[in-house]
Length: 162
Image 1 (cartoon, rainbow, N blue to C red):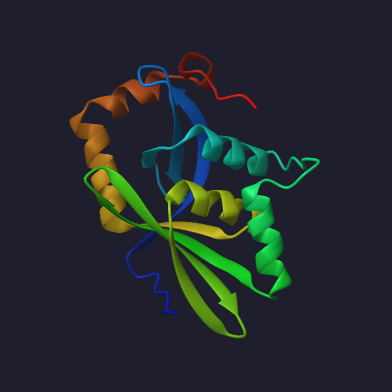
Image 2 (cartoon, rainbow, N blue to C red):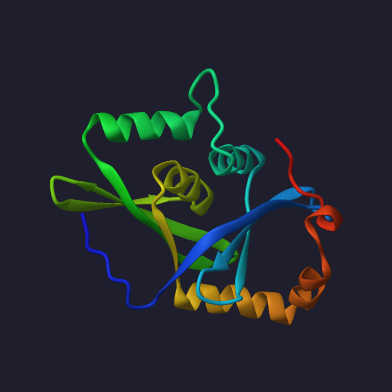
């Protein structure tokens, strides 16, 4: 159980999921709602698929894991309040899902990609801790990636297709 404070949080939205052609790995881009910063998060292929399915409101014949989680959460009269990408350690991002039930907030540790796949299914807000956003932004700036990304279009970068 835990509480939730918005003090140092930046609200973000999923800008898109693309393929890093050098690593052949999906990248999730989280864009600051009230600004221009973008946080790149490298994720797995199945999580990328789950995020894209939710973004495009696709309904599959059988529920995927994240859809099943939504069914279970709803069955227990709970809801997703929000998701917070709270820290990055050694290049690994950590997130918390805030689940509400009977006026109690439960914090559940999860990977950001899974957290976001679930948040999208609940239309829940997604936040990133300011220091994580700064770290991600400085990572982009230090590697010169930001300038290169600004020049790219989804077609150039290779949009991940379902």
